[in-house]
Length: 200
Image (cartoon, rainbow, N blue to C red):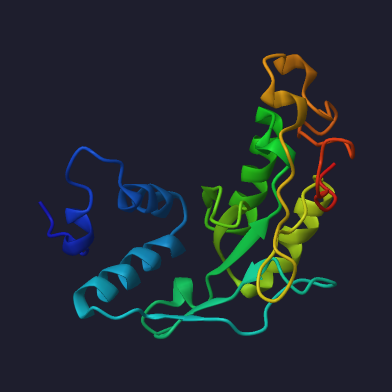
Protein backbone atom coordinates (compact mmCIF):
# COMPACT_ATOMS: atom_id res chain seq x y z
CA UNK A 1 0.00 0.00 0.00
CA UNK A 2 1.32 3.44 -0.93
CA UNK A 3 2.24 5.80 1.86
CA UNK A 4 -0.29 8.60 2.34
CA UNK A 5 0.75 12.10 1.35
CA UNK A 6 -1.52 13.54 4.06
CA UNK A 7 -0.86 11.50 7.23
CA UNK A 8 -1.90 14.29 9.62
CA UNK A 9 -5.20 14.87 7.81
CA UNK A 10 -5.78 11.11 7.65
CA UNK A 11 -5.96 11.15 11.45
CA UNK A 12 -9.01 13.40 11.19
CA UNK A 13 -10.88 10.68 9.32
CA UNK A 14 -10.65 8.28 12.26
CA UNK A 15 -13.42 8.01 14.80
CA UNK A 16 -17.21 7.97 14.68
CA UNK A 17 -17.76 11.54 13.44
CA UNK A 18 -18.09 12.84 9.89
CA UNK A 19 -14.84 14.23 8.54
CA UNK A 20 -14.37 17.30 6.38
CA UNK A 21 -11.16 15.64 5.18
CA UNK A 22 -13.11 12.74 3.70
CA UNK A 23 -15.37 15.28 1.96
CA UNK A 24 -12.41 17.15 0.46
CA UNK A 25 -10.85 13.87 -0.69
CA UNK A 26 -14.13 12.98 -2.40
CA UNK A 27 -14.15 16.38 -4.13
CA UNK A 28 -10.50 15.90 -5.16
CA UNK A 29 -11.48 12.77 -7.10
CA UNK A 30 -13.69 14.97 -9.30
CA UNK A 31 -11.55 18.13 -9.41
CA UNK A 32 -7.79 17.71 -9.51
CA UNK A 33 -7.15 21.25 -8.22
CA UNK A 34 -8.85 20.35 -4.96
CA UNK A 35 -5.99 17.94 -4.20
CA UNK A 36 -3.81 21.02 -3.74
CA UNK A 37 -6.24 22.15 -1.05
CA UNK A 38 -5.53 18.94 0.88
CA UNK A 39 -1.79 19.35 0.39
CA UNK A 40 -1.67 22.96 1.60
CA UNK A 41 -3.83 22.01 4.60
CA UNK A 42 -1.46 19.13 5.42
CA UNK A 43 1.48 21.56 5.25
CA UNK A 44 -0.36 23.95 7.58
CA UNK A 45 -0.90 21.16 10.12
CA UNK A 46 2.74 20.07 9.82
CA UNK A 47 4.25 23.56 10.16
CA UNK A 48 1.54 24.87 12.50
CA UNK A 49 1.07 28.02 10.43
CA UNK A 50 -1.63 29.09 8.01
CA UNK A 51 -0.62 29.28 4.35
CA UNK A 52 -3.56 31.42 3.23
CA UNK A 53 -3.63 35.12 2.54
CA UNK A 54 -7.09 36.68 2.84
CA UNK A 55 -8.45 39.82 1.35
CA UNK A 56 -7.54 41.80 -1.68
CA UNK A 57 -9.91 43.35 -4.15
CA UNK A 58 -11.72 40.64 -6.07
CA UNK A 59 -15.35 40.53 -7.07
CA UNK A 60 -17.94 40.78 -9.79
CA UNK A 61 -19.25 43.76 -11.77
CA UNK A 62 -21.56 46.02 -9.78
CA UNK A 63 -21.05 44.41 -6.36
CA UNK A 64 -18.91 45.43 -3.42
CA UNK A 65 -19.33 42.13 -1.63
CA UNK A 66 -20.27 38.51 -1.99
CA UNK A 67 -16.77 37.27 -2.74
CA UNK A 68 -14.07 36.53 -0.16
CA UNK A 69 -10.64 36.63 -1.76
CA UNK A 70 -8.34 33.80 -0.74
CA UNK A 71 -4.81 33.19 -1.98
CA UNK A 72 -2.24 30.59 -1.04
CA UNK A 73 1.16 31.98 0.02
CA UNK A 74 3.06 29.38 -2.03
CA UNK A 75 1.41 29.41 -5.47
CA UNK A 76 4.38 27.70 -7.11
CA UNK A 77 3.96 24.72 -4.78
CA UNK A 78 0.13 24.65 -4.88
CA UNK A 79 -0.94 26.04 -8.28
CA UNK A 80 -4.43 24.51 -8.08
CA UNK A 81 -5.32 26.82 -5.20
CA UNK A 82 -3.21 29.83 -6.15
CA UNK A 83 -6.46 31.74 -5.79
CA UNK A 84 -9.29 29.82 -4.14
CA UNK A 85 -12.02 32.38 -3.55
CA UNK A 86 -15.25 31.85 -1.65
CA UNK A 87 -18.58 33.04 -3.03
CA UNK A 88 -21.42 33.81 -0.64
CA UNK A 89 -24.89 33.30 -2.10
CA UNK A 90 -27.94 34.85 -0.48
CA UNK A 91 -30.31 32.19 0.82
CA UNK A 92 -34.02 32.23 0.09
CA UNK A 93 -36.25 33.30 2.96
CA UNK A 94 -36.87 30.58 5.48
CA UNK A 95 -34.10 28.53 3.83
CA UNK A 96 -36.63 26.67 1.69
CA UNK A 97 -35.30 25.13 -1.50
CA UNK A 98 -36.77 22.74 -4.00
CA UNK A 99 -34.56 19.87 -5.08
CA UNK A 100 -34.51 21.48 -8.55
CA UNK A 101 -33.14 24.74 -7.13
CA UNK A 102 -30.45 22.87 -5.18
CA UNK A 103 -29.53 20.83 -8.25
CA UNK A 104 -29.25 23.99 -10.33
CA UNK A 105 -27.06 25.67 -7.71
CA UNK A 106 -24.78 22.63 -7.46
CA UNK A 107 -24.54 22.27 -11.25
CA UNK A 108 -23.46 25.90 -11.54
CA UNK A 109 -20.87 25.41 -8.81
CA UNK A 110 -19.53 22.20 -10.35
CA UNK A 111 -19.10 24.11 -13.61
CA UNK A 112 -17.27 27.12 -12.13
CA UNK A 113 -15.75 26.01 -8.85
CA UNK A 114 -14.52 23.19 -6.64
CA UNK A 115 -17.97 21.70 -6.09
CA UNK A 116 -17.56 22.06 -2.30
CA UNK A 117 -20.30 23.89 -0.44
CA UNK A 118 -21.33 24.83 3.08
CA UNK A 119 -25.05 25.14 3.82
CA UNK A 120 -25.24 27.60 5.66
CA UNK A 121 -22.23 29.57 6.80
CA UNK A 122 -22.05 31.78 9.86
CA UNK A 123 -23.49 34.63 7.78
CA UNK A 124 -26.53 32.52 6.84
CA UNK A 125 -25.33 32.44 3.24
CA UNK A 126 -24.76 29.44 1.03
CA UNK A 127 -20.98 29.18 0.94
CA UNK A 128 -19.37 28.08 -2.33
CA UNK A 129 -15.80 27.16 -1.48
CA UNK A 130 -13.03 27.60 -4.00
CA UNK A 131 -12.90 29.13 -7.44
CA UNK A 132 -10.32 31.09 -9.38
CA UNK A 133 -10.54 34.76 -10.24
CA UNK A 134 -11.39 34.20 -13.91
CA UNK A 135 -14.43 32.07 -12.97
CA UNK A 136 -16.05 34.60 -10.62
CA UNK A 137 -17.98 36.66 -13.16
CA UNK A 138 -19.24 33.67 -15.23
CA UNK A 139 -20.35 31.95 -12.02
CA UNK A 140 -22.16 35.07 -10.84
CA UNK A 141 -23.84 35.45 -14.25
CA UNK A 142 -25.12 31.86 -14.11
CA UNK A 143 -26.28 32.25 -10.49
CA UNK A 144 -28.15 35.46 -11.40
CA UNK A 145 -29.78 33.79 -14.40
CA UNK A 146 -31.00 31.02 -12.06
CA UNK A 147 -32.49 33.58 -9.64
CA UNK A 148 -29.80 33.61 -6.94
CA UNK A 149 -28.02 36.69 -5.62
CA UNK A 150 -24.73 37.20 -3.80
CA UNK A 151 -24.68 37.45 -0.04
CA UNK A 152 -22.77 39.92 2.10
CA UNK A 153 -19.05 40.14 2.73
CA UNK A 154 -16.48 42.77 3.45
CA UNK A 155 -17.82 46.23 4.22
CA UNK A 156 -21.03 45.53 2.28
CA UNK A 157 -24.41 44.97 3.92
CA UNK A 158 -24.46 41.54 5.49
CA UNK A 159 -27.06 39.10 4.27
CA UNK A 160 -30.40 39.87 5.88
CA UNK A 161 -32.32 36.83 7.07
CA UNK A 162 -36.05 36.96 6.75
CA UNK A 163 -38.65 35.16 8.74
CA UNK A 164 -40.02 31.72 8.04
CA UNK A 165 -43.51 33.26 7.83
CA UNK A 166 -46.45 30.92 8.06
CA UNK A 167 -44.15 27.94 7.49
CA UNK A 168 -43.37 28.11 11.19
CA UNK A 169 -46.95 27.09 11.86
CA UNK A 170 -48.28 23.56 11.61
CA UNK A 171 -49.89 24.31 8.24
CA UNK A 172 -46.80 23.63 6.11
CA UNK A 173 -48.59 23.88 2.73
CA UNK A 174 -49.28 27.56 3.45
CA UNK A 175 -45.62 28.55 3.32
CA UNK A 176 -45.09 32.29 3.00
CA UNK A 177 -44.48 33.31 -0.57
CA UNK A 178 -43.53 29.92 -1.95
CA UNK A 179 -42.44 30.52 -5.53
CA UNK A 180 -43.26 27.33 -7.42
CA UNK A 181 -41.64 28.58 -10.60
CA UNK A 182 -38.20 29.05 -9.07
CA UNK A 183 -38.53 26.53 -6.25
CA UNK A 184 -37.46 28.88 -3.48
CA UNK A 185 -39.28 30.31 -0.48
CA UNK A 186 -39.91 34.00 0.00
CA UNK A 187 -41.56 35.94 2.82
CA UNK A 188 -44.34 38.35 2.08
CA UNK A 189 -43.75 41.99 3.12
CA UNK A 190 -46.32 41.59 5.91
CA UNK A 191 -44.38 38.81 7.60
CA UNK A 192 -40.80 39.94 6.97
CA UNK A 193 -39.03 42.45 9.13
CA UNK A 194 -36.38 42.94 6.47
CA UNK A 195 -36.64 41.76 2.88
CA UNK A 196 -33.79 39.93 1.26
CA UNK A 197 -32.24 40.99 -2.01
CA UNK A 198 -33.75 39.57 -5.18
CA UNK A 199 -34.15 35.87 -4.43
CA UNK A 200 -37.22 35.30 -6.55
